Length: 195
Image (tube, rainbow, N blue to C red; front, side, top):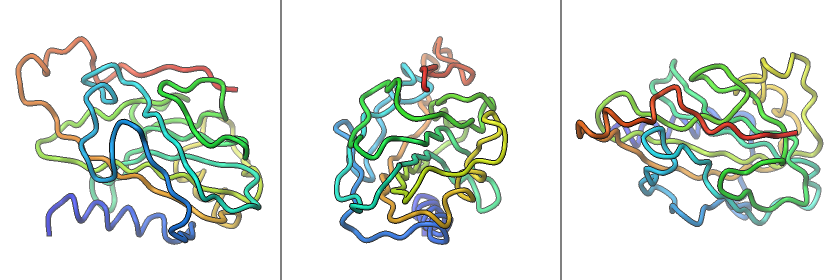
């Protein structure tokens, strides 16, 4: 079994305790299919854009959505790049470089309340998982906004998740000297405004 398969399995296990999956609720992107390679524009080696996303089949009782993008480096080392919650129930898509929708949590790269793009540090392909949660109400957050990380969000939604949908994308760090000296550094992020 390769690392890609292991990462997907661990990712599914991490979500299983807090999310039901019916198969009718689906998450997709117009620029990358399930299991395919993430275009460089959506990584730290490119523009660092957020993926355009769209979904369908959410439960009729959905009152809010939450979105998390993460990568399982090992069972004890999980990185997250995007925590977005309080997405209104009538929203069914997020455009590239979305702004003005929902509320941001922090990321594990720089700790800021913003999306930060994947910037693979090691060799070989890595799997990044975007999970959209359909919730029966808005999450009750009991910590400061700046402390809303992946674990806080998963804890806040564990009893209010109606269904979830996932999109897995794969990315390998470019090995060329040009990529290594790219003006887009690991600290560069896509800073967007959210309410």
